[in-house]
Amino acid sequence: MLPVMLETAGWADYALIDSGHGRKLERYGAITVVRPEEQALWAPRLSEARWDQADAVFTGDVEEEGPGRWRFAGHQPESWQMRFGPAEFLCRFTSFRHVGVFPEQAAHWTWMAERIAKRMTDEPGRPAPKLLNLFGYTGLASLIAAEAGAHVTHVDASKKAIAWARENQAMSGMQGLPIRWICEDAMKFVAREARRGNTYDAIVLDPPKYGRGTNGEVWQLFEHLPDMLRLCRELTAEKPLFVILTVYAMRASFVSFHELVAEIFGSRGGRLESGELLIREEGADGRRLATSLFCRWSPEGTP
View 1 (cartoon, rainbow, N blue to C red):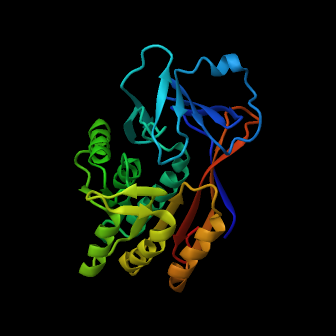
View 2: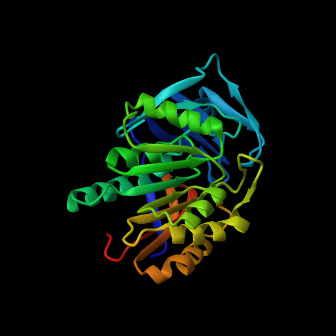
């Protein structure tokens, strides 16, 4: 199915307050931030004075791969706490304009948790589903999947990201949940798993456009994603639950990624839906801001 637009309207700890002129004004917990957003082509609705009240403004390089800096209005905490569903997590100001959470992913978190829980309910005698989270970052998808009943393998090449994810696990009181934290280059990991014949019931991928592995391995999205997806095809179990791919490359077309996933997973049948993840501004007539592209494959009959 295409296109599918998955919309997140925010929740108690997050809101897209306003957007426009290439920027977005957001609230993460009690902290308001202004960040670049090239998809916000329209004019802001709130006054400049309201934007000037933000606690932090990201300046400098606006490319995902490039570092920048934050300008603060007064003293700001080094980290602060947020919650989504069962998961509690820390936010921090990073040099890549992120704060540790991608709110638009909430649409995927809810969807996957429902399917994991349904598998556990419908087939109580079956082993818990195994989920592989590649490029897992600060671990919110891993925590939500594990809380729903999955045994999770979380892979990220950054030691800092793994440490942050484990902080979030402890903060959520989920230390006892079955999550394997693996600091390794994602491509090397899936290649080794395929050679070993290991399989997973669900796979979540959130690859960057550019990155480096633990030993300096270079990741280029458009060059390496096809091979990674082919390896993920080998890793899917005989009766899998789903595969979710999210791509933060808005200058690309979701149709391109749809056709790639269809080529690799099409022989398994099932349902493939692709489109964009959106965040809606707060308010009755809030506009929708596109943030990323996605493809989501699941077996035949999955709603």
